[in-house]
Length: 326
Image (cartoon, rainbow, N blue to C red; front, top):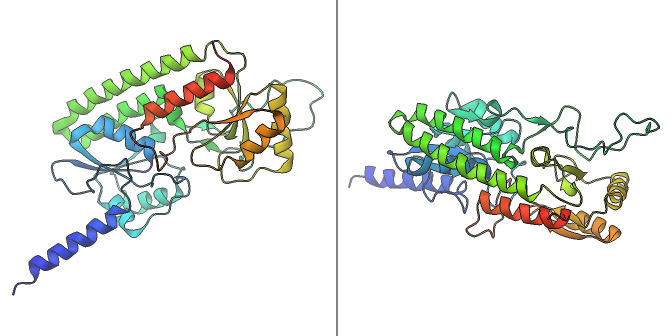
């Protein structure tokens, strides 16, 4: 009896099981390498999966390394996922956001990578508006404590929260896919243009929706919204810094509570993938309510049918309510 077919079946089954852990509820059901007619793309987390699928269309197979409902910052890769990175025809990632992905790319990525920070340089985390009008004033010798986890020189990775920046990333991704798959280069360009049109429409909705508001300060669980606040002339007051896992100090909680009162905040925002307890504590202290403002690092595990656009539009409605926009 010839055992070679059985060996091939076992090998294929083993590979499929290893790859299965990397496929999220929102990813393609296919695994990398399943269709030789498509470009195998590995995306490091949800927004990059979204833009890869929209630009790639039916010419690509996209696998998302981050599981739904989990914070992507601290992603640890299993051997199967490292294998996907090494075998992918293109790895789309954001350097500095996920150390494990950076390491896998450095060791196995070769020239098959697309780092979105090479398209859109990241903002400094310090440019989130924490001066609150005190800059240049005399008599403010005592500096306010920075949010936990926020260091000098740190960069804010949440570039996708500015739709216009995401559109530029999509344009460059189309070029990169075109180099990997010249036969479909024109299709990638066309799909990127279509996505740009949709993102510019979303940008216009935000600009108009946040144009006339009673206040422009938002109190957020962590300072993930620098791109959004810069684009739409808002100001974020962060309870925690760039890493939502860092617990704020009692001094920081007191400062945020004071600023929430000062700006008559009606809403303290928390995130889908982070515990709302701290936000609820401050909200109770100042007589405000809590609501979700999603940095869209990943979709929640129970999100059915939602995508980048639906979450962004939900964010807009929550912002309009919190800021008293007309």
